[in-house]
Length: 275
Image (cartoon, rainbow, N blue to C red; front, side, top):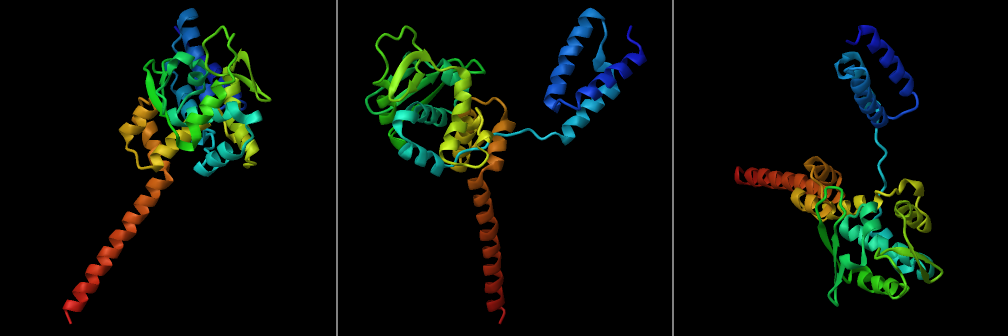
């Protein structure tokens, strides 16, 4: 049976950890320690109320670092102006990532067989998704996406022994080596650096997925459409994109002032009739 003094020892340990770790890391450490102590010492630290309260307080002051998003103007400029001999691979990743709200793991595991070319559009199926449920998205002629894809595909060596779609590209040529997952995470930053955007390092591996959701929310999409698009199970995640949507905020603003104009018009009409 654990003693009351054990809580003070554990609390002191987390107090020191809190000086270097963010709230999410503290909770991960807590979870691992809880399982270890439960198995090896038969100690249940979930009963330590002071410890749990301390960890919850860390959440109050913690603000998660969110990836910045690209604008449609950023995307258009990059696809049109960035030289293909250096950025062709990044252009295809950008097109696929935005059209499919792709995670970097989904881009990494995408295979040649996952892409169906109808002659006018690409029908792309994501199998290896986080929620183990496939998603399908389309790449068409928008931003020359279909043409850019084919330009990259034509450079694929015939002797590639694997079926991963994304392979390394440099100086106008493709190698046989597949692109690693960490390389996908760096692509948004490289796009931002080319565009000379401030704080380019803030465009993380989550940038393409977040930008895609933001574009869709700005178009007026509802929660269910957003959830299907990105494969999100959480309604709160989709609601967050709608709440942050500039397009949605503009719509609300117009609705507010339109209502005020109607009220003012009605008041004026009543005033004129009473004369």
